[in-house]
Amino acid sequence: MRYLTAGESHGPELTAIIEGIPAGLDLSVEKINQELKKRQGGYGRGGRMKIEKDQVRITSGVRHGKTLGSPITMVVENKDWKNWKTVMSVEEVPEKDQLLRRVSKPRPGHADLVGGMKYQHADLRNILERSSARETTVRVAIGALAKQVLSAVGIDIASHVVLLGGIKAQIPENLSVAEIRQTTEASEVYTVDPSIEEEMKQLIDQTKKDGDTLGGIVEVRLENVPPGLGSYVQWDRKLDGKLAQAILSINAFKGVEFGLGFEAANQPGSNVMDEIIWEEAEGYSRTSNRLGGFEGGMTNGEQLIIRGVMKPIPTLYKPLMSVDTDTKEPYKASVERSDSTAVPAAAVVAENVAATVIAAELLEQFHSDTMDELIAELNKYRQRIKQF
Image (tube, rainbow, N blue to C red; front, side, top):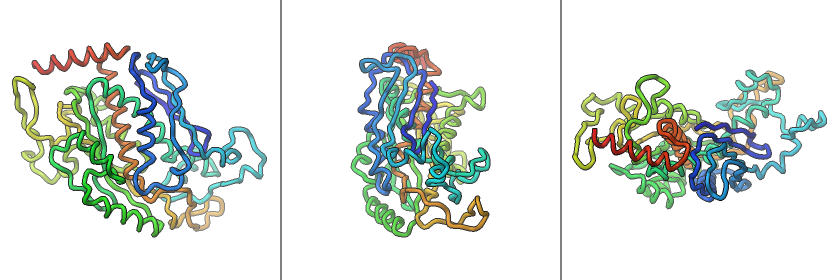
C-alpha cells in the first residue's frame, strides 16, 4: 500500500491516490466524512473551519460500494478557492495580479523562508500554500480508509488529548480504545478527563485574546494488533520507526514516544521491561505495557500506545519579528488565518496517520489481493502464533 497527496491550501482541491487496498472491501464514504468532520472540530479552531465543509469525493477504484483493487483517488474540494481564483490561478495572470497576496515576510517556525531559499521562490506564498496543515485533510481521508481495513480484521483504534498548554489529563490505568472513543465524543477538547475540560477551554480563550497559540501532546492507542508486525532484521523494517517517522511528518509535530517513552530514561530496567506470561487459552502476554506494545521494532500483541508532541502553531495574530526578504529590513511576520490551537484536531490526524501505517504493514506482510484472502491469512497467522 502506498499513497501520494497533492494540492495547495487555497487551491481548488486536495487529492490523494492510494494503491494497494485489497479488492472487496466494503467502503463507507460516510465514515471517511465523519473523520474529516472530526478533524475540523475541537475547541480553538479558527475561521477557515467555518468556511470549509470537508467531504470526500471518490473518483476511481471503487464500484458499487466495494474496492476494486485498483488505485483509489480521493478528492476534497476547497470551498475557499472561490476567493482565491486569481491569486492561485494555474493559468498565467497579468503581472499586477501576480502581486496579489504576495508574501515576503516569512513567519518564524514555518517553512516559508527555508522553502523559498531551497526552491528559489521570491513569493513565499508558493511555499506556505503546500506546507500548510490543510494537507492533513487528505491524510485523514486516507487514514479513514485504512481504518476500514483495520476494522475488517478486528483492529480498533482511537486517540485523545493528553496535554494542552501545560494542562495534563489524568489517564485511567489500562485505558481501553472503547473508553477513549466514548469519553472523547462528549468532549470539545477530545480529552478522557472531563475534570480539566473547562480549564483547557478557558486557557484557549485567553490565549486567543492574547494573539498567541498553544501546543500539546496527543495519544493514539490500537488494540488487537497481532504480534510480529514489523521486523528487527533491518533498521527500516522496524514498525515503531515507521510510525515515528509518520507521526513526525504531521505539521508542527516535534516529538514521538511509545509507552513510557522518555520517562524510561528515569527508571531502572526492572521498572521498564514487561514480564512475559503464558496461559493456555490466550498464549503469551505481558503483565504490564510500559513499552507501548513494541519489542525489537515489532508489535508484541499488547495495546499500542503512541504519543506525539505538537508545538504551538507558528502563525501568531500578534506576530513575531522577521525579515522582509525583498528589503532585508526587520519586519513583523505575515499573518495568515490561523487557530489558537489545533491540538484536538491533531489527535484526529495522528490517529489516522497511525492507522495508515498499521494497515500498510498488514498488507505488506499478508497476502492481500482481496479482503477475503487478507482475513483468512491473518486468522491463520493468529492461530499459529497462539500455539507457539
